Length: 232
Image 1 (tube, one colour):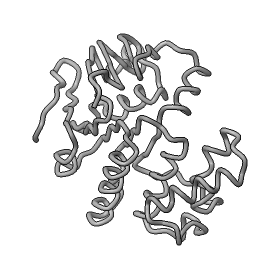
Image 2 (tube, one colour):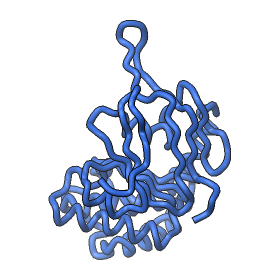
Image 3 (cartoon, one colour):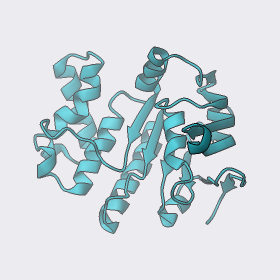
Image 4 (tube, helix red, strand yellow):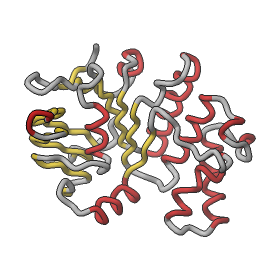
């Protein structure tokens, strides 16, 4: 790991609504995620874990403070610049796999590359490499409804890595899976994290999973202290 963080937040805030309907989710949040680190983010439901990932992933904009990715301030960039950084730097895995039902596994994985205007043959070749890395070569031509829940999520992991991101954001990636499939998907994410040299942030309610990450960040409600912990 490098001493220079891949992700740095200083005094970041985020809320929704206004006046009487205002809900403050994050207030004055500080967070560093080192390069090459696998960080688990834990905390009670509704505390803002998904909001935090949306801010880091440039899907939403902080209302205050400073957000840096790869050493650059990105919190106030316009939409086009944010999209460019997202496409170049960040891969996402969500609790729901969000695969397109009309595309087979290969084309689901290749989709981000086709959007980036890769030639079809090259994009599909890259998809085949990634499906092999998640042990789904024989399922490449299967559609989502022909795959198990664990297989669908493994396709989603492969898709997240299609554009060779340096930062992987995973929001409850095993939340919809049974124990065996959850263990398999987490082991896969951890193995790919190490093999590719990613910086990874995983939001999870699974305490055993969190303990197998490099560090744990406990997110607390506004007014309480959020901090790093090694064990739960």
